[in-house]
Image (cartoon, rainbow, N blue to C red; front, side, top):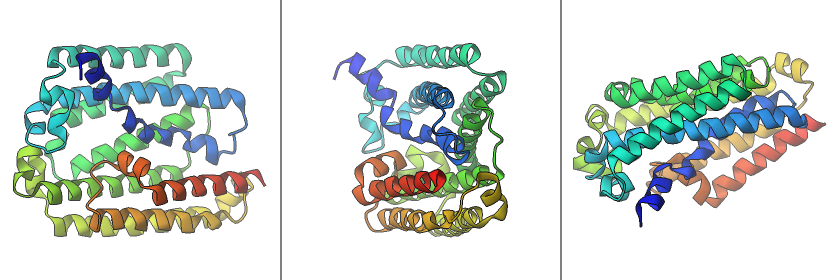
Length: 292
């Protein structure tokens, strides 16, 4: 693997699926047939892909020593020495500046502010917040919320509190699941890879996962049954999509506990066919219900 290929790998394009959350407002506001708003949403998605890659590069530069003790992350281009830290740092800065400039030209000021907030939050995470127990996962979840809100602000759609709550809870679920996987898979060297893992235990994380799992299902169910949502969107029987959400949550828990997966939610989504099919069926069901 040469340095150019290594730089591309360091951008972690497989992680860009996380940025699909920006389309939430477009779908749940029933604007998914408006070409102009679709184009704006795609721009927002692209910008957060650029911004998130900037953050991934920064993280790999700062964590290269710890990544070297991880069985999988030690093979990352920066940790393995294929890509120099100086080159990665320069590309990280270039991507961050490019994302902000493009947002300034093509999107409204509020979306630009949210993009900057996302970058600042992740820089704070990389430097300090990842060292604070519980707050580390909440910071990651905050990044998902910012992306969801940006998707709505960019297309001038009022942000539903339900969208924010469901996004936050789902992100917390994935975040605590990732910490559990790291703790279980790394065993005695877990704290060498990520110092904050010293303050977690499998039992404690299982308690947190249980709480957010229940909260995700309840919050989404209440959202689908809300008279306010039905009246605002003119959608009936959105609760039909609830079983897909429940199966997705339960399937992910199965993968964490029985298959020892969960270290990378994006990788799990793309490689586990039952989970991927469930997500696609959920999305298709929502689109059909929104179109009726």
